[in-house]
Length: 288
Length: 261
Image (cartoon, rainbow over all chains, first blue to last red; front, side, top):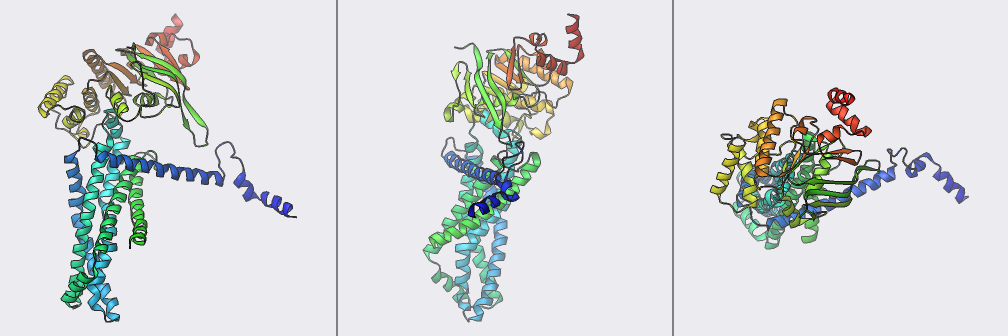
């Protein structure tokens, strides 16, 4: 009986299709496709892992390109200050208003400074800074490297025996690792000030309790968590954004030419933003 | 010291196709490129001309077989050894591959700044000299986007010659150029080769014009190679696929010449 049901199951069209040999070598059954996709993902992870190692190693290779590092620092850091300032001010003010609305229900408006500062320092500061930098500078880095790859400029560097990591990529890594934590600090300060303006000046919270609440509740541990997050996010953003551009030919579904650059730029921003959010949860769970 | 600049011994290179089969690009290929001469690698589209260049430069690994440069086995070299190997080559890419965010001067100076310890004054002098030699004086502050196709090729050649390469590799050097410009570029190649004395390897489908430069011809066809000691020897070959290639690329003039004989 069991044998009969088993063979009946095997003869179902869906099951037959899953285990069927490919016809004419072109059509593949779902299992083959799944395996193929799995292998591709593994290959991509391996490729990106080796890329990260080469990029970090490139930071220590001589001669160090100080001028290029400063140019990238200016582009990623100074160039993003206005975006970060606006985002932080608006986020801080919204937090001030929203926090006041919620805390007021419990008669705990005095805790507003504590709530705003902890939220910004531990969560929103590092996360929003990384996402804003991914959108502004990460997309540009990805497009730059993608265009250099499709116009054979990276091949030309390799053929001149110039290490493309040391020359092009490592200065971007170092600049991101320096500037994103600093931008996060800026985000925190501006956000807390925004919360102060909304809470104290608009909603009438006592200024002393706002500042004192912040002073007493924010510990070194909280600051450390924010700093660690900002470094990890900086690495994720610069790694994914530059890596997508560098490997534009190897990435499945990228297409060719200008279209491949636009697709990879979108993918770089989306992947790095998702990676930042996932790692935000993981780091909070591990370090909190 | 080997008398050959580059040797391929039993080289196999294939690519995976979407259906899981392998497409054979080079199937146990053997050829040698003599030092100081100009060798043209010809063949139809997709026959592996550019792959051959990439294998020589170590931009791609071989499946099996060995590649020698000046008698030295360079198959699978990596890291510093690969960098060292590449300093022996100069490459002129199909699209010139100039750094579009750098000026002409900075493009040509880049290999000198990165690979030598020359002072900025020495670099300036060397770049000015090559600009004059290649009739590019006065264009040094321009950016690649402001140059014509022919000028870009000349800047690419100037950049490739900076580190005094033993071997120059040209990947489809006349693609996108008009016939007059093509002739000018070929004359320039001949002149610079005479002055610098490099071994030239030209991958091209610009047949028969490129034969004006060729000492040897290598034809790639379905993973196999045919080596000819001169363009004339190739035209007189009776192998069916070579006859077909000659007819397709050179047309009736050469065919009628053959019939007369």
